[in-house]
Image (tube, rainbow, N blue to C red):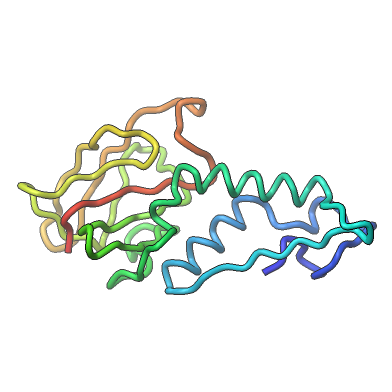
Amino acid sequence: MTIDKFSWGYRRDARICDYLTIEELVKQLVETVSCGGNLLMNIGPTQDGIISPVFEERLRQMGTWLKVNGEAIYASSTWRAQNDTVTPDVWYTCKPKEKLVYAVFLKWPTSGELFLGAPEATPASTEVRLLGHGQPLKWTSLEKTGIVVELPRLTFHQMPCKWGWALALTDVT
């Protein structure tokens, strides 16, 4: 994948709208990893080997996002569900040895509640935490139809990251 939508190399006449946004890049990464793939992100340096500021910005933004959510990406595997059928833009990965499932969601729900249709939780042993937040979150089981997670009430500046968030779900099926 290339950050420039129209070229694998550097273009002097490229406009800012010709580049993928960080939101589009994070979505592509999450979709790819949840389906068992890996992502190669291309940037086109100038003829002098200089990386233009827009490419540098996107790479730094991706690094910032991965510092918080990398646990859900690095060394993860596909889970039985790749994406959620109840809530759009929720993608799953897992680490079976650690009994962890990650739900990466790309839109923060305005209601403060995230409905996840795929995981089945056990009240006695399931724990849900938001990566970068630290505190366990409250959740409610919907029996065989998933769970509802109560997200913390955070201001924009209190959020652990931008552009997407990951929940770590312990001991779900």
